[in-house]
Length: 126
Image 1 (spheres, rainbow, N blue to C red):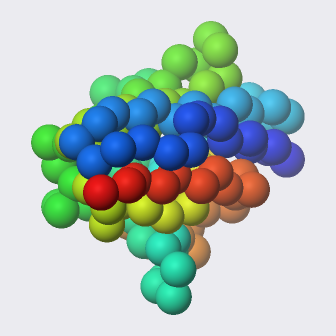
Image 2 (cartoon, rainbow, N blue to C red):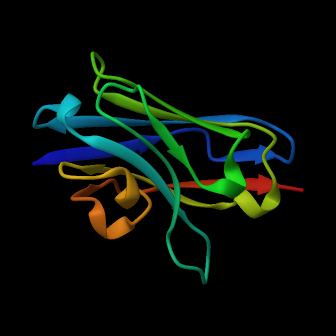
């Protein structure tokens, strides 16, 4: 079992930057694909980014490429999401998630992920 806890400053102005962290405990962190999702009010939870075990491969939602960067530090059991040039439409609850079994074509699907954090609110003011 893996426990995931997200953290990060919650409010930022449009055009600003924010970094989210997700600390993991429990089973071997390095054995999991890690991902970030987000859910805005009234909308479905959507894929943001994912990173493979070694960190050598990353995946992004097309609409977020170039603005968001996912990284991981297996020694610290932590995955990060750097968000730049933030827009009001980036306002959402952000969740980190972990998946044990995966394939490149499946990383975008929330049903793939076995464990989820509780989420952290990000609000981008205009």
